[in-house]
Length: 246
Image 1 (cartoon, rainbow, N blue to C red):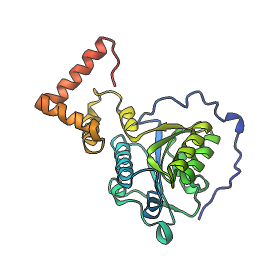
Image 2 (cartoon, one colour; image 1 turned 135 degrees about the vertical axis):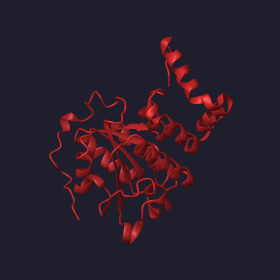
Image 3 (cartoon, helix red, strand yellow; image 1 turned 180 degrees about the vertical axis):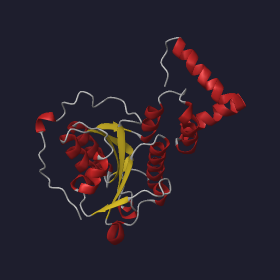
Image 4 (tube, rainbow, N blue to C red; image 1 turned 30 degrees about the vertical axis):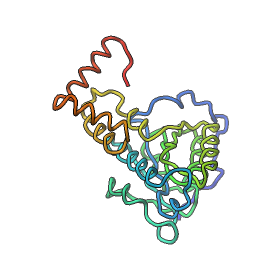
């Protein structure tokens, strides 16, 4: 087991001074770490409905795969305590390495940190269980080291609603940026004229994005086979007129 020391030469003068912390996520500037989506952790998660948690985590993982976002999976005590990562997630990345830890704080495990640093990205996207422990600790330490941290709030869960909310506030105060899995997906797509990911993104939205996806289904039904071309043409017209698109 490889652990990192808590005190590892942090330059505290850099805390919260990163002016680009709120810049947009893009397929080439971020990496995702999915933490402890395991049965034992889910049993005690009370801040979000269990099925919604799974749905949101799956939507997040699928989003990362569509855009080729480097994705790291890590568990705690998989064989002895918490069980395997949700199969709904691992099926999306069937050959993904699983980093199993003993430390609650994955930023104290050299393997996790090295896997992230090897991506060469500065923006760290975190999701998992529990918000107040296994998300808050690595988020704060990564911010201390100068990384830009984004927390997928609806793909995290705490032991109580209060625990989740206070952890989110603590991370935001430290400099983290709260997002949702759907905002992650749409921020990466950004432009509906990006045809290489258009079909995958709209299909994912219809599968996992609730009434937003239902709206896409409705539009397709109304416009028929020419839905994609019509939607893109409408976006181009809006752009020419100088109005804002999604």
